[in-house]
Length: 471
Image (cartoon, rainbow, N blue to C red; front, side, top):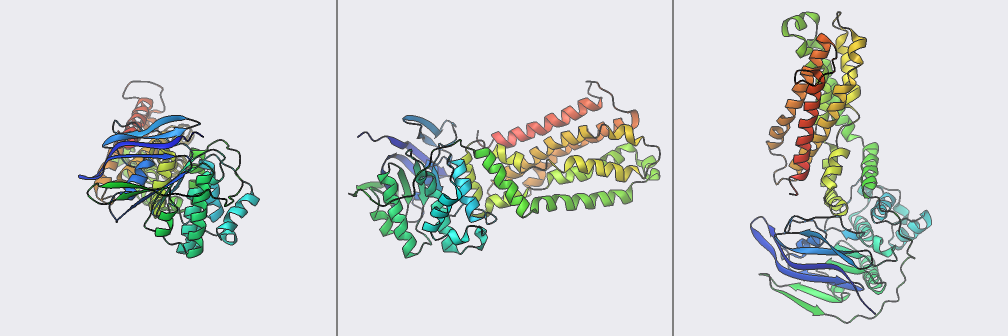
């Protein structure tokens, strides 16, 4: 019987800063085996496991995964190539889950991104086996540490359990925080997964879990790696019946997850709308016909756009949700190289800018008697549309800074200053519309050209923020 590889790692070097963590590593995971990574803390087990999921930049070497029946593709290498992983299971050392998710939502999300779908009866069966069925409607933040870890481990294994096709599973310290009953169940599931043709790589210190492995890769320090084979018998432990594979929905699952989190706890909306309304109230006290005669209509145009601009440059709540228990790192591994692009769009304020511009206009224009409200308000959607691009660029910048070692450093303010340019262009364009009316022209001193320029600058900032870190 032919056994095909699921993951191939060749001549892998991984650096953390200036320190070489993984040196010239070769590793292959085949169908039907469990590989345990063993060693002291800091020896590189977690780095190797996470690198297998394409989560770290590669100094040299390559990581390849199997797609379909036999085709092996490079998912990450030292030349910068990176593609999304095939359906797989992943449990991080930290659980990688948001506390706002419910237990059943977590399992459904994991299955959706791996191309599986189950009904409520099958879901209840899975949760019941792991002692979670009675908590399926509870938020993860309401679970004890042990139950949350059970859910994280189940989430890592269920994409393989529910698939009839061989899949790879990556588990980092899966037994950490589990009680004796859950550890025994974990061992049975590991052996059953291997007997069903799936492959598992796990990092562990647990002797009981190590004994369940077919191969033990031992890190002895100073990049000294040894391998030990262990005889295992075929497992007769019965896993839940697998389902037919369905369409993989990674991006829609990320969007639905973010929408549910915001609907359940609207931090993002409140954080954006409260400062915007305060700015509008302040502008209302400053704007009058006398002031406009002194400072000019460009100041008025700036005050109209200011609440909308404030709403788009505020850091998205998605960043704090990603930082919770390494939730963002789990999504990054699952989504792949387009994670930053998708997150910058999902995390941006694309609903508030347009209504805020119209609200600001109608509130502030009442203070000035000689404005033709109907004509100008007809064209307010144009700067509102451009503000969408500013919102996406601002979100991408915040996501970029959140990845830096000192995410709270003042560099975020300096980077956001770049977006003042599109705001100034929009202010000048609106000022022209207020004074002379809207004109369709493509010279640089026409309102339409200014708004196009503001949009292009924003998109350039977005592209640099999204693609430069992975270049």
